[in-house]
Length: 177
Image (cartoon, rainbow, N blue to C red; front, side):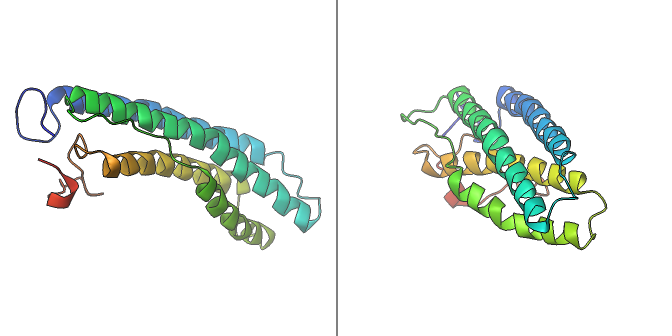
């Protein structure tokens, strides 16, 4: 896929600005997820039985994935659709939201990790631990939504992929030039 101005694939200045602008809503969303989860974690009753404490942690994590995961996948679909439009994609394509059920199952597996470390007093503050987990899951859902749509897009991803170090990805399988 080529930008409308006919330049080489990659981010046009307007697309780069759009992608950068999308980071602000994602940052706000992850910060909100972190704060809300920490606030919920303040209500954990550590005087309850260990099983009840575990159940409280499970409910907090599931609610974070459900609530903020849904918002995150919607935001990613919007970003992908807008970026695709900005690049003048030729083929019809509808970006879709990520199925959160497998992520909820994965988060459920993390409950035992958190619970065991809380009970062993290895975590100084369970609120911080759950807040970081909520932020991480929210960001991960956003990224996975983008990746899944890019893989299905008949025109290829509407932007250059970057490695975690920021170096452009030059894998020809990732682009449909």
